Length: 386
Image (cartoon, rainbow, N blue to C red):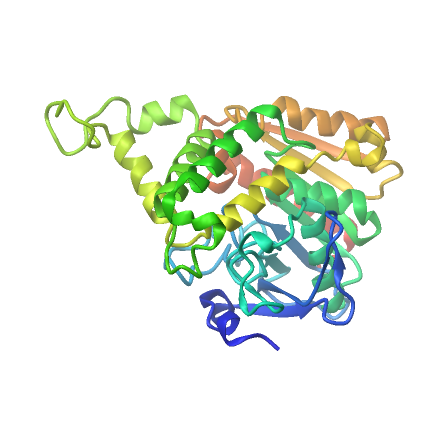
């Protein structure tokens, strides 16, 4: 049973959720047995009789399960509404497409803002530290519950791509095809550094209250907004910023010689920060960024990435973008080289785009065509084209 506090969550009202771990808790990498816990998810399309047409989409750090439907908090279209839907690359007339709010998230799945059953208060920093592998183990419980023996495809970008790699390495028998997009097999020192700046901004906010801001009736909006602004810069590219903003002034004809938002790019970042705090939990940001930092698939397999995919039956399509400096093409090529080393079935596409890391979330025709082509080829091989 869900507590009244959990039932009031707008994500649970707007979508689907399932409780797990009451009888058999989930053993986390940190050594904690977690249970019970809730996973919130959205599903689009219908599962066929053979349950062979299921596609799992794994969301990125600041994403959630509302990839192709109106967001219950912001009212905006889903973050992949140009990819998931009738007649689109992930055609919901043919495929059953699922997206799960990750464990540790803040849109219905159990995380630090959820109620700790032992105390009746929000978990806050008492919530156990989670990993990408923990997220995937939790997702597998849902997939098993739905009676899906083998996923037709697992797809995701950025942190979602990390989950895709973890799925393919941990459960190769459960995955027919995998599409890791704009991702890496481990988080770099530079990316960890950016995350640490964001975490420190949150924790320096006086309204963070040592993580117990919900119980105190407060929220570290300023710190979380700065964390979002810092991260958002890494999702873009210098050419994209120059094209969109340059040095143009914001609603004025001359400099103010002060510290308001003189430039359009400043106003844009402030808007991004302010909008983000309306839909995201600060502690979830701490936990999910830490999960990304801990991700190192090679380390999990004796220090050699190829070992993660030895004798894999999974068909892969690895996608990168030329202007992505957060997860550059070189890191995506490392994944391809590891797959080639074990003679895996892998294709690789580097897409020309000046949009930066966020290109996979935008309307990029070559990316859309690449994804549609790979899915169609896999469907033909799998016998799903009828």
